[in-house]
Image 1 (cartoon, rainbow, N blue to C red):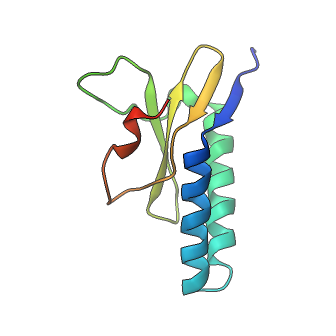
Image 2 (cartoon, rainbow, N blue to C red):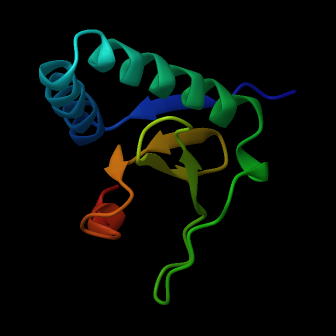
Length: 104
């Protein structure tokens, strides 16, 4: 098995921690739960990225996929490259669809 590098864009990390702070204000511990859920999703991505749903776009030939978080309304869009997985965002499922698509 070939080792695949994982890269997380700064914007994605910012989105994760912004959301975690918001959830923490709502309920103590909820922000930490979101971060833990994100980490579990990243492990799923690393374990079998090809099995996760493709993000269909009309203009892009990139191999874009997404991983849904189980307990929070977020998903992780990522680009699967030959030797690298690039996490593009931590996106809310109901807001600003595909805003992250131009990130590389």
